[in-house]
Length: 559
Image 1: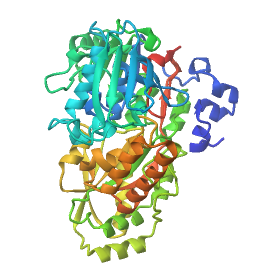
Image 2: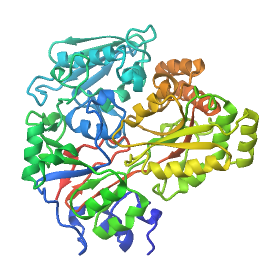
Image 3: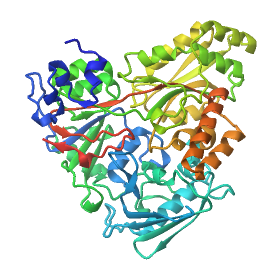
Image 4: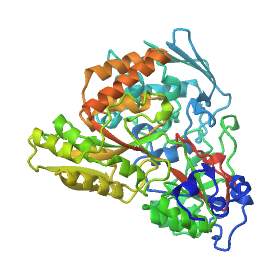
């Protein structure tokens, strides 16, 4: 049987060994029950620890001050949110809050916390702590140099900084030890879903500094970050050099974790190795050095099958796009942006073997599963001749255009950025654009690097659905993260405000109009809706894959 992308992954959440043998019964069994071929690696030397092979080590740990998947991969294990994500439906459900009620007018949200919640430092996670967190988010939205430079989560949800008249946050207050009331000036339909985002995790107030930043967040989750000395000791016990603490994040069991908010983890210790490029991650899994790797690529499927690994495919909830800097003297021309849209062969990109089977061409920035009219966006078919005519009308004269992209890393929505850049740049070169590569090494925060380089013309970027609402994809491009593209359209901002409190039908209509405006103004060119997957080794009997990447190590079962 020939192994290709469809036979390997088309069955969804399945073991690739079954794809080779055609045995559907084997496909449904956990890894522990699958007969291991002779090529299977030995268990990791750190046999008492779960070992995750990640793409890289994030520059920060504070989830509120980041948009990075690698930050959230770690913070989700340490810090929990008031509302969680139902693993079956993706909808919001109670988590730290055992109940959540919304007033008839939608302007008051009441949360009642579980009894006995404690942070890993032993302090109480009570109503006062939650209020302190909400005020931290609000204050950070108004301070210079804070997360608003990369798109404030608070602004994304509440519409404006806390001191702005258009902000829909009014106040927050504690009632006793367990009840929190959040007051709004207007209804926000997306608020419950947004509060499931890891950016709104509840941290121990004692762990953030005077400027509101938390260098090492302390939460209520099943695990906690190890101190430097604990990390070195743990690595030494695992037979590693303590210096590896620079490339490995060590997580230990949170002895204060309350099982009301989730089951106890099978692994008391978790090591997250920053392994960089895809070949390195694959090699470490095949050698039995790690238990789980993310950002699986099609060329890894056969080696994974031969190793006895299983590949778990996620349902798509992300978009990869080409951002365009509208403040750039060349890119401010709509003719140039339209030429880019006609020049990039996006259907060929979607078929590129760097993406897993099922990756689809994107006509707008909202994944189809979120219910926005797929016909709302303007369609740009590949037409190099028309692209060249548009460049001529724009008066383009071979000015160099910087195109930024990350290197030496990968994300579920951007698996091999160097290869994506190569195809996009080649297509743009064919229509006569003078593209200058600007690679960004993994040691730099890629989003910050993009925002701080004023001379950029274009950049590769992706957005993951942290919660299931079109607002999560549209709002940053239209309002809170406009520094990325310098896009400014009063109509889209007005539509966002209207959609925030509207009923479902009116929200869908408003979102369709926003999608239409984005597709005509072209601050970004949607490229593909990527399919992503994780691979698990023979010790892992269950892994909780999630479209929102809401994957908790406590839910991993080891055989």
